[in-house]
Length: 374
Ligand SMILES: Cc1ncc(COP(=O)(O)O)c(C=O)c1O
Image 1 (cartoon, rainbow, N blue to C red):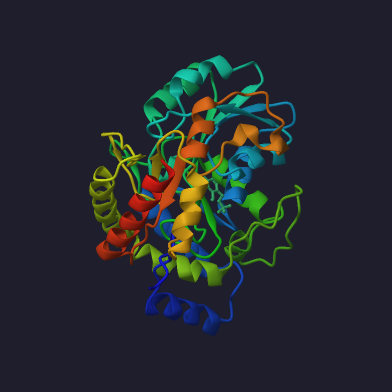
Image 2 (cartoon, rainbow, N blue to C red):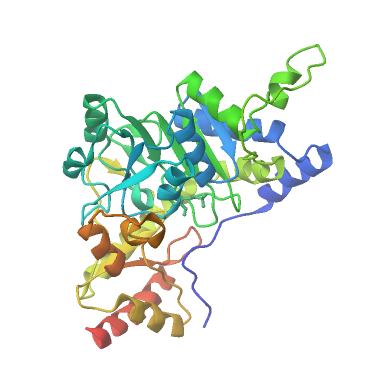
């Protein structure tokens, strides 16, 4: 019996050819391939600026710095997320204030946002959980009423839509991840996108040590010695990484379409199984299923299900984390839905090459495990 993984990247000869071109060119650190990748992302999303960085955590950090987040500020963060979101706030010396999520979509509960706003609150970070956009109309309305910036954590949501808008392009800045488990991957990688020239320039500047970037210097006929005006970071993506990204972008829509078919198939299977719910999808969004995250019934030990499937060579995982309970944040926030999803969520195998017969096999083992553990 072959092992079924939770996720698997989809590569072919195109990635190798793109990497070969970069290696042959001799320019392997940040250069023309990064620019090409940024242009591809910007044009796909219909945004003016895209800044490629080392990962989405770096993109979130730069996004927060560019809007001026500093010590003493508070930033509202959707609680149910990978802790990179909260960490990026800590990097700025600010405090993440966690807002609970909805049990159905796993996304920030917009009805709970206003009660968390204080005179120190400067921004909101909604997270598009597993590729399903958060309720952006309401978030934008609240942000306007309270003069807050909105940074979308779109790590999992490249290609997702909220009504007819691309996830990541609705707030002030959107941050994407190209980690191995994301829709498309470069191994590690990230991108910040915005339509605001000032924010874009600030993020670019901070991503390259706070110095004038190589491209800006290249546009000049003069020999320009760079100057360092801020203690920026080395968050540059390399051209080798971008080469993989350029090839992956050609596959993005195909991957999303196939995952939507597989999610439909998973939904049908889970409907036939007791003690587990398929993921709920709002009707005004396009969900891209970075992960397919179900909920086991209350009282069922989700970790035991993961162990039981592992014994059948099937890899599954928790959904993601309840941030407020992580010791690093020492948070007074209470987010009971997030905690419940943290305990009940089960991510099932979902990737482009997964076959319907794989799902049949996993569903059979899952049914047995649930019946034994109910
Ligand atoms: C919601 C969310 N935000 C941020 C990140 C961080 O992304 P990266 O690993 O590219 O830094 C992740 C990655 O798992 C994520 O799922």
